[in-house]
Image (cartoon, rainbow, N blue to C red; front, side, top):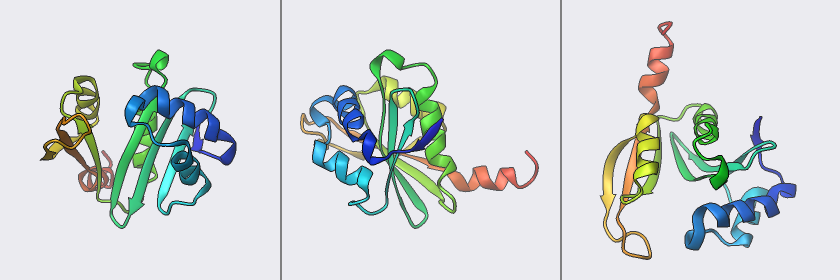
Length: 151
């Protein structure tokens, strides 16, 4: 079951963030601030009993997927897809979901392509090591319009 993260999840999320993001991991304080509500518009979702999380901000009609992480031993189990769809399901009124992904991360790019994300922008030398970030978008308006006609 996917649910909102709670303060009791912080230690687990700090570990997962480090395992999943490596040198780009957020600090323990930033993770704690996000979970406890000290940062506005940030939602952490966690899969109960499994090791995966998603972080998204919801502002006006845009959802920004800031993080998604799955324990390396559980990758390709469908957990990442469930977390991503939970973010989308909670995006009431949003027109689109945006995210950034490393251009050299073929696995992540394939994952997002399978979930209807398309490249809309490039950010050269975005990451510390000089790698390019791709900005991907998923348009939710078409999905919602299609659901209104019984499809």
